[in-house]
Length: 497
Image (cartoon, rainbow, N blue to C red):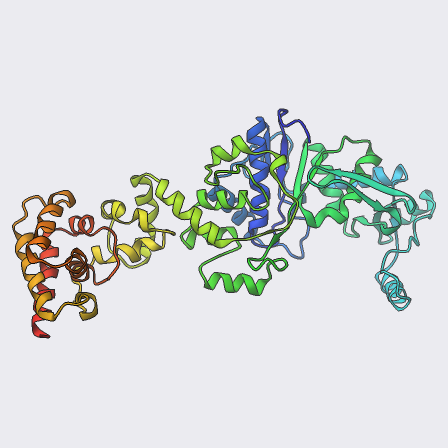
């Protein structure tokens, strides 16, 4: 393991070709944590050279999603920095110069093969049961001849000249030494016909020039690792530490998450794209807590962590390269726990948009009043309006099933409702503490079970069988509305005797 006491310079380098998913968010989080842990820097770099798949809104969604998660970078396309520019489309000439340098030193070469020749080559290889690969047709063209053809405007790409014998060994911090037979490698394209660099070249150049000490990325890049190692070796650059993270499996644990599974999850109230979580009622503290532990274990006894906790505990030694399944039940657990840890003021502020979206006409003060009643019963912020809605309604129409109690006749329920109205009317202290003892005394006086009496009151006041603490809710609703609902329930029961 590397010395984690030295300041780390790390980067998160997404491509703006789609939405930011959980795997990318986890990578960014680990980058952020190791930078903070070591007093280093975290860089956001946008790898936008794939113009055919470019999505104009993707970069802003990435930025918004990371900010929502609580991640801020030290350098990036939106804030600048000493090693910019931080978008690869603004660094085209840099890559072209390095590609030319590799050609001049014999580590790469110009390839003039036409698309038709390449297609015919692959077709013949397939017919011969060979794995399709570039056959090295242009590999030995003399450099002077190749440069004349380039100068004459002949279409070409630049390919890395990989050895075809021996083995290449590269060290990964999570997986140890990774060895590959060079005969399995092909001369990969590093610069396309249009002059744009591919990831193999662009990312290596940027990582070197930006002083990146640790490359934390998805395991899908493992097959390309030998090529990246060769580029560093050819240029004589110090190599970063390589960290290829575990694969995130679908909730079933069977393979990577498919688009169809993603859409089905969304119908169930879950998501895989970062910016969907906010709308579904999840809070960033919980999502951070959750994704940090996908393929990692930071504490054998505790799993509730704030961002500060994660910074303190983070170490590459805690990461596991084995595939990790997405457990959404665990996310719900964390979300409820982090909601309960919020201050009353903070939770009210976060809940207000959900109350308004649910059609509840209220303001911050109104939500603030109900927070103590609902905070312990919420899993997601979307639960808040549903749990508390009855406290904001003008009227609650009586429902027989909610009012009738086990082993009681309607006449018993009428008696309870009428007596409750009398007791509540006489209360001077209409707080939860002030009303509890008089109402409990009433239970003893009537001779019914507490569950029967309070169950009826719950049904009359909320229209529900399960609610937050009854006395707290009554205090929030107010004496006048509570009396009206109890009176309506008594009248309804009488009519149906």
